Length: 190
Length: 195
Image (cartoon, chains in turn green, orange):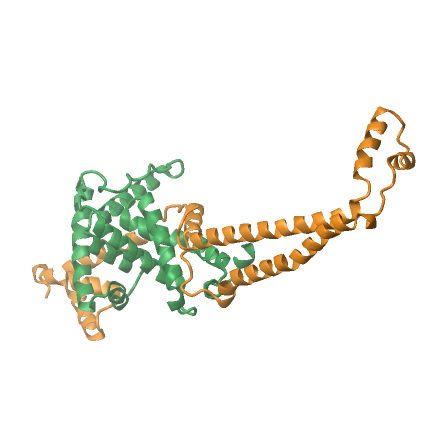
């Protein structure tokens, strides 16, 4: 497998399409971090995120023949991961609460404050607030925040990914950000 | 538009401005407005800070090995098998059956030869001669071995090829069976099945 690690994503895709599953394994290992974290930001727990990451790669494998090998693979994968996670979110019960961590999500991890304790503590606290606020958004708003702020997609790309109009993207994004701002204000006060 | 209460509807403009999605004319107008409106400038700064915070969210470590193993174990079967994949089991079966068919006359000949032509067999070297050549001392073990060896005398040459043919035939059958089992298992795994 190590003989494949120097190859570009495009080359690995071509090899996979030619029947070389080892090349696909390299692709999976190369992009698991990005895919897993996309799912984790949307789903809020490691188990669901790992399942969503698996689904993402299996979908990728099935759809690989539609991928243009000169295009970057990572954004494509993260978009699949966002869609997979959104579908999972829609199947979940909407029992999100900000009193504790949102239902169905892991409690925020206890960070290591051994180095630069004060600054790390503040950063960690703000990070927790941000994650909690994002997870408290409804699924479609959560996804649109993910696509805009973490995948850095344009409005047109978001519209194509979610199969909605650009005007709809603007409306949803506006609502999501407005709600996020309110949630963060509440979080900071509490 | 210097009064901040007039600017309550500008939040969406600020979002689109920061996203780089405002058309040029609207962008220029908004930038002009910003020079006059303290409330919008404050909201813009606050929103910029919020957007910048998204970038500070650290990635958490992913269970790469587990995800990779699970994905590779569940890869679906290819939608269209290559010609080589389609014909490989058939080719293996044909070759296996061919070998079996070719070995049958030999098997028959070997058996017939053994029973019908015992005089063609090459007499084995008597044990005593062998023991002398190998410098094995005489004793009860030598006597017992001599008796045992005497029973085998005479038929070694025809039996050996016969046994070889039988062994090869059985080996071929075992190869065919094990191969078909492995192919079946591999097909199941490719289609998302489990062991």
